Length: 113
Ligand code: AMP
Image (cartoon, rainbow, N blue to C red; front, top):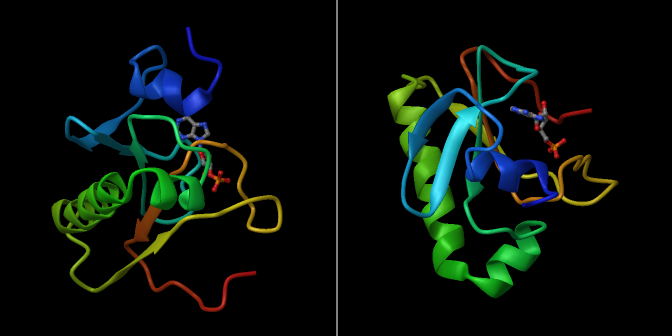
C-alpha cells in the first residue's frame, strides 16, 4: 500500500479521469483545473521530482514528455499549450511525485506569478 497520492492514482487506488495511458505513464485531468485543458502526466514508477527522474531513468523522462505532447494533440490544442513541472517549495510543487502539467485552451500569460 503506497502513501504517495500519485502512486495511489497510478495503482488505481484513487479514481481519476484518465486521458491517455501507457505501460509506463498515465495522463489524467487535474482536480482543480487552471485552464480549459489541465492534464497531469506522471510516470507510473515513483520519482519525487524532475531531477530524480532525469537522473534515475532518463528514458522514462522522455516517455512522460512524449505522452504529454500526445495529450496536447488529443485535446486539440493546435493553438499552443504549456508543459510545466513544478519542483520543490519555491517551484510550487505540492505533490512529491514527478508530474507534468499540460495546460491549454486559452491564451496563457507569461511570466507566471
Ligand atoms: P503541483 O502543485 O505542481 O505539485 O501539482 C499538483 C497538482 O495535483 C495540483 O494541480 C492539484 O490540483 C492536483 N491534484 C491533487 N490531487 C489530485 C487528484 N486526486 N486528482 C487530480 N489532480 C489532483
